Image (tube, rainbow, N blue to C red; front, side, top):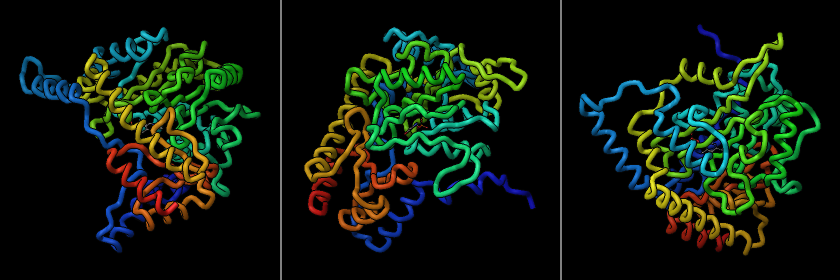
Length: 406
Ligand SMILES: *Cc1c(COP(=O)(O)O)cnc(C)c1O
């Protein structure tokens, strides 16, 4: 029989969201009448903006005519989209990112999961705790994490994010080569200030490390002094890759489009000290294992940057952030300590008890699903994540039920 890649045995038994799905399935089977409100999984609920749908449809029609039909597209994505991204997301804010430093993809999950492939197996990796599980799991799959003991892998530096540091991890005292940062953070909703991010950039420069900066939620930032991009920090081009996605910003979770910025100043070294361009390495990796995002989807993503698209996206964000405020107000009024919900669509609530126990309680008593904090890392224990991705009606109904049981 074929042998298993042993690294896969080190993964936690089931991915967090499958575990939640199973509990919800069991509850539904026992309570077929219950109307469950899902504030758990980080998926959007509001429809794709009209400007994106129009562009999408027109592009599908182009695919039906021989003269405008498109086969394989350019490896990094179509220039029209990369130029719109560079101009609107970076250059118009004074950040020098060029269109050829942008790699269009079908998701930040795959990009942030795949990027570690370019690094040697003995790379020292630092990962926030709690955080989006993909960074850790992809390093476990690669065999870079070491052995597990009480929820911690021996070769990973955990960047503890607790109420003591306002969920913004501080610089480790040890050396790390590859550092994942997520701001606004999933699940805590916390954001780094410019000064904090500047410390990380300085650390990376001093240690010759590379930062993987996940900005999936940048569009939800409402406070003016919070950096939306790591490239707002001087010299960040020399140390950081940035992941962004249309998923949460523009409702593309089912449509699939994202991009990764790989500045040309970034290098990895081999054991002989020879330097290799990270931009060229990522190009090589992507053109070997990925064949691009469909033309209609890239046209739909381009429409996000049209005048109408910008207004529609702003309205989507406003809707979710008003939901977040409603959730936050509920927990605050009930005396719970919470973070997030101001610069991120997640409200991170201190439960005062085991996170799965709190999960079970609100599922049973209010038929509301949230995400146990411990699923995002050991430091998430004692917390639970509420997502504001829902209709106003469902948020109000969930709040009304929770008000009665909390
Ligand atoms: C949702 C999310 C993404 C986006 O993933 P896609 O594959 O682009 O849908 C990336 N990072 C974080 C932290 C997320 O929560």
